[in-house]
Length: 162
Image 1 (tube, rainbow, N blue to C red):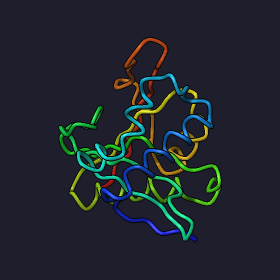
Image 2: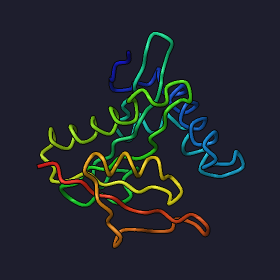
Image 3: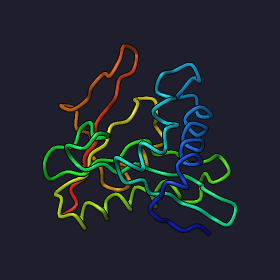
Image 4: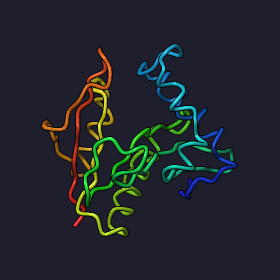
């Protein structure tokens, strides 16, 4: 059993560690990759976005960064859209509904804020995440696919929330 809550400054280091661990263990990140710095900087995410985490009595199981359009972590969100990024779940918490609960929380935040949709981008290789997004009603948004650096191709998804 786990609960969801907004992360605070005291959670920042652990949020960063769990996120990096999740990406690295799944082979989506090498520790030499510059993205490690962004993923591990939970303090900046807590300061400049909303970070939602799942936890149990043993600690943080996973987290997601929710971004409003026009804020520092938003990459795809346009006016009237929320966005989430950096969804990561610790290996010990896989297949327990943690990722789904965090994505649903982002959908709920969009509803609470009166947004029309939620968007995200994901590495093409993240097939398991794509199955989750499909199950939750997301559809591909190819006109917003992008490449932040050579060799990293991101695919976009959208889900209406109204």
